[in-house]
Structure formats: C-alpha cells, structure tokens
Image (cartoon, rainbow, N blue to C red):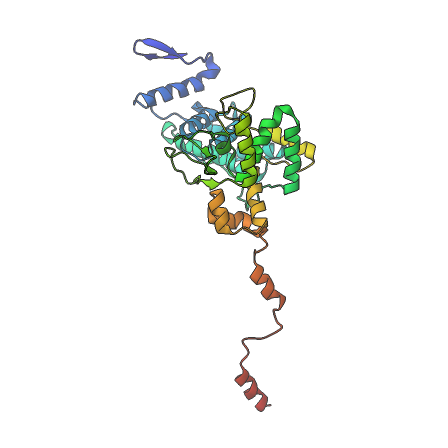
Length: 350
C-alpha cells in the first residue's frame, strides 16, 4: 500500500488487509508532517504499538532517560502487539499486569509501563475520536532494589572475568562511583563537547550534561570524580584510544548499549538478587546514605531532589529519627510538664 506524493507513490512497505491499520497510521503521520492532519479515527482503527512507537520517537530528545522509555515500549509490545486502542480496557490492563508479574516484574514497574502507554495515547489524542482510560495498578511506596558493597563487588567480578562482558564491568563501575543513570555514563565522551556528557580528567570533573543539551526535570549536574574511579579512568585513558569513556572492543567509536542481560547473568552467578542497570544508581545512593551522608550532599552529588532522597533513601541512614529514638528511650521517666504549684495545692487539700 502507498499514498500519493507529488505525482508518485511513496511505499509504506505494508501489504495485505491485515496491515491496513498500520498503513493508515503511516498515512496519518505523513499528513501531519505535511500540515494536513486527517480526521481522527476510531480506536479500533489504529494499533496500540503504533502510538507507543510514535510517542517514543517524538519524546526521545525531551526526556531525561530515553532508555527507560524504550524498555517500556518493548515490554508493552510483548502483550499489546495485534491489539488496537479499542482493546485498552481494565480487563486487558490487569491481564498485562498478571503476565509481567509471572516473569518477576513488580507492580511499580508495570505501573510505569502502563503509564507510558497512557502518555502515548494522550500524546496522539488529536488522532483519535476517543481516548480510553488506562487502568493502573495502585501506587506503592518506592523501595528500589539495591546491593550491599560486597554483593556489588561479587557481581562486578563475574562481569570482569568474562571477556565478552568486560565493557559491562567498566560501565557498572562508573555508575557505582558516580550514581549516574546508565545512559549518562554510556554517552560520556573523553573529549569536551557541548551536545552531551564528557570528562575533564585534568580538573577531575564529570560533566553529566553538555551546555547545549535541553534541561529537564531530572537535571544532570557536574560532580567531582572520586579518587578510586579516577585511577581507573586515567588507566583506561592511557591504554585505549576511545571516543567514549567506555566502549565495547567489537564496536569502537560507539556508546555502549543496554547491559541488562549481562548484569542479570552476573547477579545469578554471584547468587544475589537481580538488579537492573538503573538499580546500580539506587545502590550508590543507598550505600552513601547508609554511610552517614546527608540529604543535601546526596542531592548535590547524585543530581537527585532532596524530596526523593528523603522519601526513598533516608530511612537507611544511621541518623534517621535518631533524636526521636533517643527521646523514646527515656519517655515517661520524667514529667517535664508537671505543675509543682498545682501538686502542692492538691497535697494541702487532702
């Protein structure tokens, strides 16, 4: 199937009646780009995956963690492929939750994935005659997975001992000492640039965001590089002629992609609970707080809001409710609000 353009056909690569919804979606995108948006279509005329894909492509440069959006889109495709927007019902959303929980995904993860689908539908609201409500699992308190220092060391060892996963070990090590998101670390170059993160080894500063990059709600502030990590970075700088701070030997000059599969395998071999690449950021912040770090210092170093530090990590701190616990240790032993004069008067009256 195709659509006319300047007197000739532009092919969509789709054939047969079963591909009609996708072809119509391609036509809609084309007309939108040409400034002649078509009339909205009914929910049963456009696949869910088309709208999710368009949303991921349209928002990739605007959000702080495009990789997470890509992961959500991939997860949604496992269930919603072949389904149209009309199939977005509470019953199907609950079926999606059940399917994801069978493979070990948490309710909070599924809620985030379904929230992505809801955002995609709202993003394409003008293309639909009706946008269905997306049922979401109840929100839970954030309790991200994290590893102890010994557990992380064991995982790192299993990554490092395999030649094919050494790149993942280097990336995980950088994440651990910086507490940065996986995409920030993988996109960091050794040379200064304005369109992305880069390293200043002379000043020992990791610039998480280039000057020309768009600021988002999840800011990426520069931070001082810890001495232990600096030793590794300087050694890699001497040994490798890399464009990026970490590269795969088979793909020189390119940032590293997803290391989740390698990380999952290493966790299994180390005998520890599974964490995602983003979980290394949680591990770094949690261990910092458990070591006595303050909310303000954590917020500044990890580019994470004080509210998030307080809500998600502060209960790990040895200083958490320290005064309250001390006060409860002597509660009831003394009555500081007792009125001596009143006691005397009551004594005289007896």
